[in-house]
Structure formats: structure tokens, C-alpha cells
Amino acid sequence: MPDAIALFLQSADNAYQRRLKDVGLREAKRLGFNLLVQSVQFDSTEQVAQIREAIKNKAQTKLTTILVTAVRDMDLAPVAHEAAEAGLGWALLNEGTYIDDLRRQYPSRVVFAATCDQKDIGLLHAEQVRALLGNGGRVLTVTGLVQNVEAQLRLGGLQQGLGGAFELIALNADWTSEGARRVVESWASGVAVKQDLPAAFVAQNDEMALGIRQALRDLDMQRDWPIAGAPVIGSDGAERFGQRLVREGRLKATVIMPPGSGVALEWIARVRDGGAMPPVRVILPVVSFPPLSRLKK
Image (cartoon, rainbow, N blue to C red; front, top):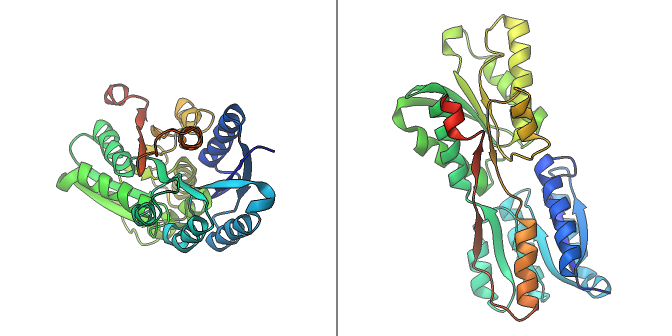
């Protein structure tokens, strides 16, 4: 039986999480690993329980490494140490502040993150907004779980990129379409005049971008606000989801984030075959869809 790698996903029905799974399964087969996949519905407690169960059964499954997209970053810090103590590698597929300390404490373990530059996603969102609106305006952004460093970094990048010429309203949701719809509708209940409406909306993933669109359609019908056609920008950019939504005109733009699962598996295989350890962070580039030049047109 080949060595096993366990992949723990935030959700089974999120488009980006499905890409992580699909790419992971393909690359694991090519590299000679048995990939064990589990998911939760954005439930951090359940994710920790799944990982602890995998650590307990590592001998039976021939488990060598854990890959994970964290629901809540710091909830995984203790269990990451437990995995390293048990002799397992740990590859994070999003950002986590604890990964540096973990690597220092366990230099012989394969401990690293394979992730997009989260701040760059926010900076690219700012460029997309500027391409659409020019040099100023009111923008509403819906973030993922604010406890997660990736949500904080994306928001920080957006704030830096927009600068003082834009008024930015930030709402916190939970990475889901329904969560985004609820927070936008709750925010809108406190808006009295149409002049206070944003000129553009930014979501930290494409699922939440759809939730924003639903909220805008509802507000248009319920309060006669001419807002349903306002540009909405997302992120993740899966070809069959986020990019499709842009092609259909349901989103104005998205950010294509390459999945880190395949890259992570390649590094793990490299170490298995006697190669060098990966850097603490393997950074994947992000690009605008459509290109910024087309948005400016």
C-alpha cells in the first residue's frame, strides 16, 4: 500500500475547495500517493476532530503528511504540533501565522504552506476597482471569517491599494453565499438614502460574490434601489464557476487563485525522493479575470 496523505477541506461544495480536491487526486495518483480526502461545512471543531482521528490511525493508513485548508487558522495550531510530534508532515493550503514557529520547532518534518499571496489578492481587487470606478468612490467589501489571517491580509491589501480616495465599508461573513447575502441585507437596513449606496462591491470569494448579487436584486425589488447592476468582484476564479460567472455577466471580475494542493504534493514527493525541503511558504501567483486592460476598456 502506498504512503497516504490526508487532505482536509473547509467544505465539500465550495468551488475552490473542489479544485483543491480534484487537483490533489490527480497529482497524488501521478506521484504514487494514496490521497485521503475529508471535508467539513466550515466547522472548525469538526475539522480538528477529523485531523486528530487521522493522527490516531496513522499506522493503519500509512499516513505521512497532512494537507489542510483551515476553517479557523489558530484552531489548528495545537493539532499541527500534535501531528509533528507524531512524526507527520504538515502542509497548509492557506495562510497561517503559526507555520513559521512549527517549522523552526520541527526542522526535520515537511512543514510548509503552499498558498497564494493573500495581500496580493487584495491589492489586485483594488486595481480592479480602480479600473472600473476611476480614482474614487464608495466600495463595500465582504470578507471571510475575520479571525483568519487570509481574510485580514486580503482586506489590508484592498485598503492599501484603494488609498484615501475611496470610502471602504467592510462587512464580515463566513465564506458562504448565504452569509454574504445576510450581512449585506443587514447593512442595507441602516441605509436611509440612495446616495449612500456603494458604487462597487468586492467579495473575498466567488461564493460570497453571488450572495452579494442576490442581496442587491432583493434590495432593488423591495426598496426600488437602482443597485442590482452595480459591479460585483469575486475571488477564487475556478474556470467552471468564478470565470463562468464573469463570462455570463453575473460578476464583473474575479481573481484566479491557482490551487496549492498539486504544488504541495510535488514538494512532498521531492522530499520523499531525497530532495531538499520546501521553503516555509511556496507562493502561487494570482491574476485578474478578465485582464485589467479589458476592465479599463
